[in-house]
Length: 200
Length: 200
DNA sequence: TGGAAACTAGAACGCTCACTCTAGTGACCT
DNA sequence: AGGTCACTAGAGTGAGCGTTCTAGTTTCCA
Image (cartoon, rainbow over all chains, first blue to last red; front, side, top):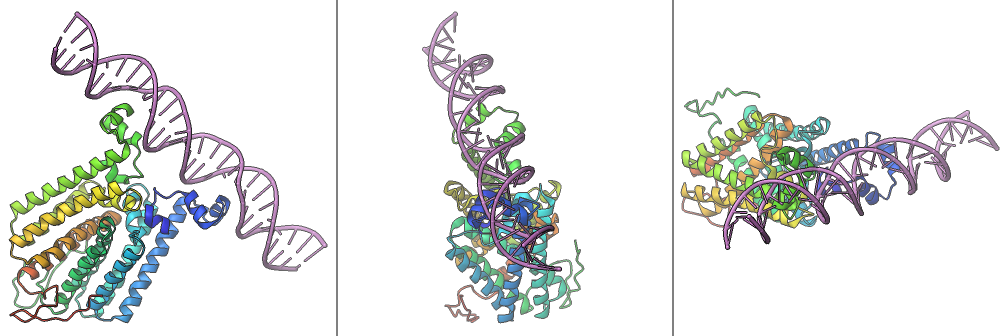
């Protein structure tokens, strides 16, 4: 997983993997009959569930969505710094590399993203945010995390991730305070925001 | 550039490039003496300035930041759909692939991100947003764009990019309405929204 | 018109890749 | 004790990689 975080899918060779693992080629192909693709799928699944569990753990510890999001971004920033700016997440990297050429891996990555946004969505709804807003917010939060990873890693500066997280937290607080207008400006309703929205 | 958008850095071979260009290997190495790395740096620079110009053009056409951001995300979503979900931006992909192993390319990617966020920052300040808020917002917007690319491409669904864009536009509108709390809690300004916040 | 430089052209090179194959070893049943 | 099978072990294979090299062609200016 660490090699994929450093170098992505195409940049990581199986010889690097076997060397790092101290295992011969035969063992690798014994446990992963599908070869590199099956190994990569396992990496994506593993890190997908790991982040999913981390997310749940943080949200359990900090039930307030603003605090939870802040804690998540701050934790990611610390990880980024302490790992010498290895990518915190192999999924986004691999997804962008192979989305056009390897549908199985694309869907494995998609599964992780969907798991995360679904988990966030549940928490937001629990906190009193409407389903439509929670849909958008959960997607935007996952996007912001992935984007923050890209910026922080590229700049070797975790503060970019922190800045992004601060903004998302601020946005979330505004939403919880019922302060933001509905997403679609086609209604000039007094308070009722009966927002029709495409589900896509 | 299209090959890098599809396959990233390590996934794109120079034989693919020369074949797509209809040029022999000798020509490639004549024009790019530095080989693959110099070619990649050119790709990053080219697409970096292209997006920078697109951003300025959109913002010229739509001086209102909310409209500009909405237009930018919507345009990106259309590009994503019409290109059969090729990555709209090779920079993020390449950056994640090589940030740990190739410092020259890492810095080339960083230059593009910095150019974009600086341009956004200027526009936000012009629209009346304070410098500190504009710093954070411009970084968060670039992060959201990159993250939206990842999600939209991985899911083959541009609506994820649209949802992210809608949220960022909403956030921006709230900021312009002076509705959100300041980013730094160290000042209790006249309108007195002194909100204590944990930084970590 | 001649000659240097810019550029095209693609074969060839050394290397590493993902993967296969055969042989050997250990643990676990009965 | 013996046999089965999960597993280790690593040499070997063909393909493709980035790069180099030599030869040929075109362009351009004196």
